[in-house]
Length: 293
Image (tube, rainbow, N blue to C red; front, side, top):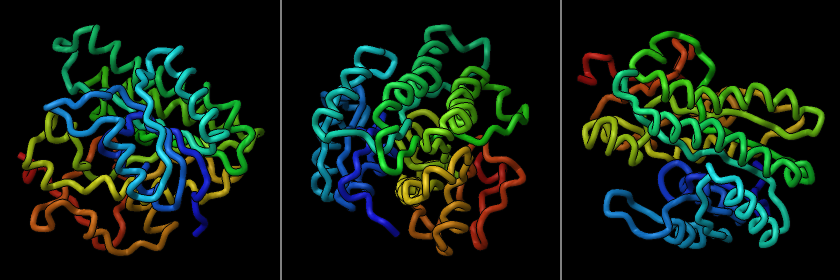
């Protein structure tokens, strides 16, 4: 497997969770990481800031550039990408990880929250990708990766949280269109999504607390899967909607996923948006709906 040493990654939402895990995995190769997030000062409700994330990246072996950035703001995005290029000389990989979530039915979804999800998930993803593109076109093996789901149009993925689902699928629609549009430039555009819930602040604070955290996998599974994506040839590996464990099994030869589990004594909770036709790798079993209640 080739190294990401010397490559420059720009990662949104990288102060904690999945974004930070991807950053640290690349840092182990000696990569340069631009850490984009809104959290600059410590927050008692959320672990991690751009500065603490930068410290972790450096300890892992990479170079870090912490940048406070709200990806809804075009000027802030342009500034962040300009700083990244000025510091590291270019951008090889863009990871659109930043996301906002609110699992509310239509009557309980206020328009301010609606706008926040669209501004970050769909618009922010488009804006960051667009602004990185001139630099990605100059890279040797350029990748854009969205942390977004397969485009499975089953009604169950929309009912009860229509606004969030549409905003999240907007990220995946960017993959669908950009992958085709950028083929001529040799820029890969792919999506990556977890089969199970991932132990992040969103799971703990919004969805299920400590119980669902224990039934989750760690962000390391997505970090390893993303690292494997970046090893692929950009000119040929594009337009894919990947599920983490299946991709690691089929392309990375991983057969044992137990190390990624938070608590091996608990059943593994399935995530939203995974198509019914997506069969888990051998040995991977998910909890039944009754076990989640």
